[in-house]
Image (cartoon, rainbow, N blue to C red; front, side):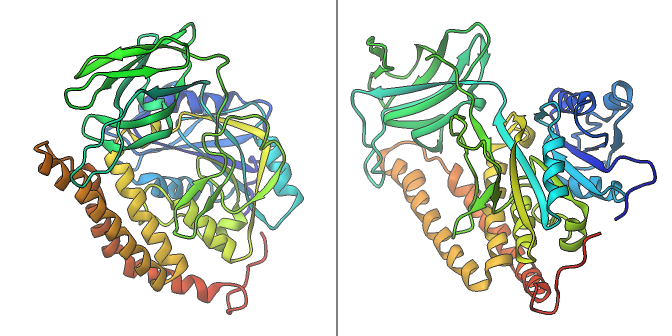
Length: 440
């Protein structure tokens, strides 16, 4: 990859899917960033339908638009954008629901210029806006029984602030169970983080109660709230001050293959303000060296969405590339907005893709161990979410079971191909006849 004559060193790829206003906000921030080095911005519009491409061509003519006519996923969309920027020395990826800070590229570029063995550098990514953290305690809990041993107190159904439904942007930090019919159940003590809305001092929490029971809640202000049986509302004060929260400062992975955002949902108190090496990079905001992509390859499009950045990070690390986090660069992220609000599909893809990445990078034996564990966990959900409610005379909730069965079926179909790709990767690793190519 060589730099085009007279063109900018850096290209930026934004992949769009159903976030029209957020995508336009993202693109405007990139174009207005006079404090960063010059860039060429490419939008890959995955739709749905005509997507945002017509508006971008009219309102932001400085953006180069690629419209494949179908949803290629984050992996496929990024690959299209990277291919369009094949003559750039560096390529940045920015989520369509993110906003870059002024001059964000300058410190990232400095890292790559200083060390030719660093393949990718990420900024500090914080959540868009600020948050109020609320602890809600219940006076008593209820145990469903008959195969369900959880201690439940109340069910979170909706959160409203300043007339806005902010449920999807809340952070359920501690004391909540997985999604079920109607919402998320909380235990005796739950910690809920609510997004700040300008001018709002209170939030309305819409909640459900255990069958036939009232609920008494303590939100720490000395005035317990009683909610009658069924569904009710609870008005709570928003604690001050509002908090800035970390989304990620690079990625890492556990021994079972689950990917983790470093610093995820931690209050930003400056604990990540020193540059550091990280195990993996996050595709939500990253500056990549073209020579790294030339050596390692681009995203595995079989993953479509989720884990594609972790997989490419692991592929590069096996070939000797290193990754850095430079927190002097800051990006704000509306977490989850670009996934299109499909919680079921998102969780299914995450579970499937984890198993596929394990097969590619940890081998067949590790993949089989994770498959067995996956089946056992799925069986526990089957007992708790479907069998136990039927025994109690309540309607079953098969949300978790269905998505896990679908994820398992899809993973089994993809495992042979991913395992074969892993074998090819290992033959190319340094010391096995592959070696790292010279940097361009």
